[in-house]
Length: 497
Image 1 (cartoon, helix red, strand yellow):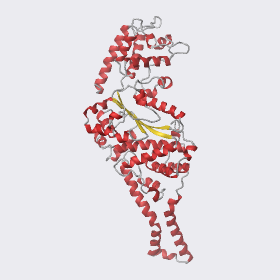
Image 2: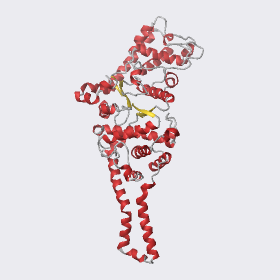
Image 3: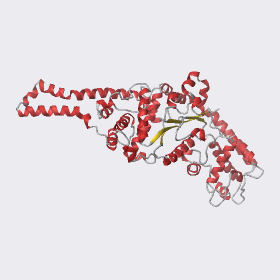
Image 4: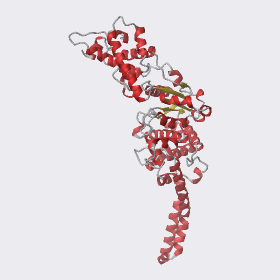
């Protein structure tokens, strides 16, 4: 007997439980994105008009990735209805590029992973988030192919609202944090400058002075037929004097660029390229501006404020940062201790409660166990009591039962009523018994795996000529016992218990 036969008999056109990852789950994306919510959804999502920070701990398969996708979807719906008060979403879920650059900065790849992460600081997170946000914004403004599908819409009317200082600020942010590989950095900078209509020709006065002195000197020598004077010392001294302002400025900018390349440890900066970009600004335009050239967070907060001011003029009233998949980077490799080293610097109340900025931290539950060992100073600094903390993304049997019914109805054939999970079982199995069974599975991923295995086990017991359209208690109990044994074995080997 085939599983598809059983499902078709109950009016279900496709298997609702054959996917385990929300990232590739088409049933979830097409039918359950807006209807199947965790009971704590309101606390996690909050209000898009004034995003708040939420810290959520959940075990593998509890639905953290699904929550991230739902937050993106709901925010996109809100942005469509509020074009002048949109939410700018930053997905901080791929740590590998940042960790690789960070490790290279710390004396190469031979350094042990746990020693590398001990040096991670709050401003490294801030640099990474600023890089993601600025790169995404620049992609949208210059029409890079990567911006398609991002959900960001910036009209010419919004672009016209940028003041000259804000255009300078955006170019300054792009200088430090635009980190796309689609085009050379100087080419992206020029495209952004052209899009913003920001003129920088006055920054080339020192080059013009040097060229002008050379042309004037050679013209004078030719006019007086004294080219032989080039063999003497004084003409070269005059040319050096003409180029002195250019040499002084570029030497100073190269030193500053080198310091930035050393302090922005999560990005790969080439000092000479950074020098060329900084030289596009007039010296007075860089005077007293925040430069991320020191190991401190103050400059990053100032640059974050500049980014927020630019985004407000472009129609974005706030920023939401989605943190997910912290257990996946190869430098962390699922280690709870390394995840702690990466995440703990972020637990700073000043950062998490920064005005106009909301964080959704979707974290593995293994990290939450370290909270019980922390000192009072940690809780005073992080103020987790104010961060909408959810210690466990728990799913009750009733919640999982609703999830199963939602997925079955989403896959139901048209004009076939509303089939449910209960319809798949013999009449002597009550709804309460099913709920009690599902309660032992804890999370949606285990629910999907178990029901999929249950359907397969049931179909293996019957032939096509002699089918059975209902799952009996014996099959339910035997499959559950085997699944729970495998689950406990997996938890034991993975360190979850």
